[in-house]
Image (cartoon, rainbow, N blue to C red; front, side, top):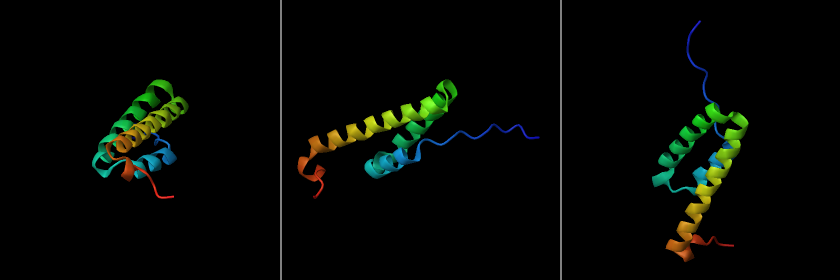
Length: 82
């Protein structure tokens, strides 16, 4: 028998894809790493269900903040073509 700890569950995949699509490459590794660490801590503290819910809202706030920041920096480039 080995004494290896069980692997941590992964954060919600759909929100990770949105985050990877939306976040600038320069910040992606740092933001993704911070969110993953927070998710692991919250799984231990609150349980998987609540940790996934909190991950979703924190990632959503991160994406919203990035969108507002981009729109204020350059409103013309922040718009998507219709």
